[in-house]
Length: 93
Picture (cartoon, rainbow, N blue to C red):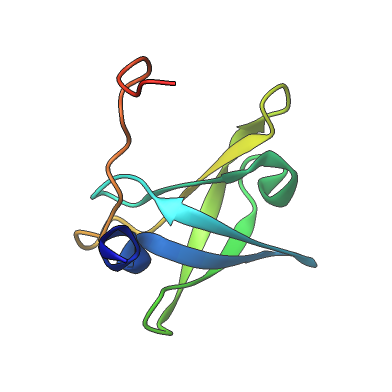
């Protein structure tokens, strides 16, 4: 429950063209990590719905097909709520 409370503000809904998905804001300056099959290529417009229902526009930065990951950039006009990523190797399997 504590974890959900911490990451909920950083969780977003996404619409890229006719594709829908979800993502997580991973930096204070508005980078969103999501699935690559949602983002597609760079430069696409994204409708982003924040956890409080606010809607903003973002732009796809691209994807990594090998890992099916993609990045989206939110406007850099404010500090965004975000979930901090753990460095690789820092989590015990």
